[in-house]
Image (tube, rainbow, N blue to C red):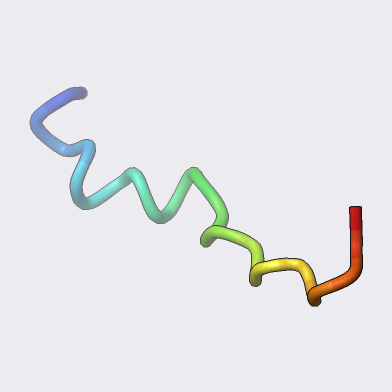
Length: 25
C-alpha cells in the first residue's frame, strides 16, 4: 500500500482546500 501512496494518495485524499481569505478566523 505504501508503495502506491504516491499514485493512490491524491485519489483517496481530496486536494488541499484553498487558503481562507484574509479576515477570516
